[in-house]
Length: 104
Image 1 (cartoon, rainbow, N blue to C red):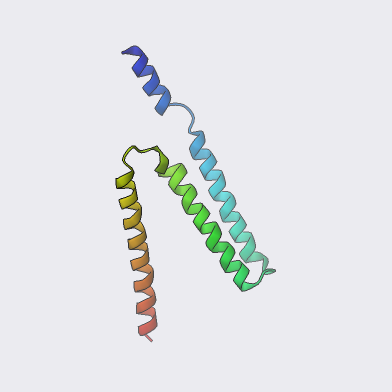
Image 2 (image 1 turned 90 degrees about the horizontal axis):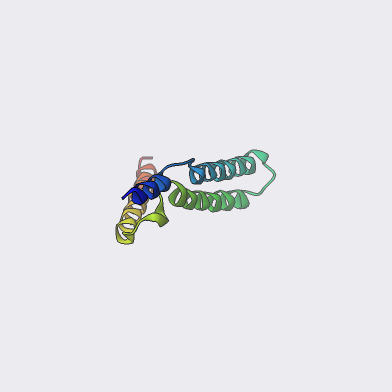
């Protein structure tokens, strides 16, 4: 009984190093993207491709470090939630582009 309480406290207590590492990685990716855009020394194609790649990496970091994607036992619900998130984001982007295209 006492051993279970100690293990549970150690599992949830302590300094959140994982969150700090995730924050540092997210800030680094954001600053790299900002530097690429502000420097004006790269082509438009390279700039857009770099921002998209950095955004994908940052989304993965957010999922792994802050949303605890790899820590759940129920992968099915996580996949459904992520799929719904992608569907919602795609709907908002496509809907916005559609409205902007036909509002002229």
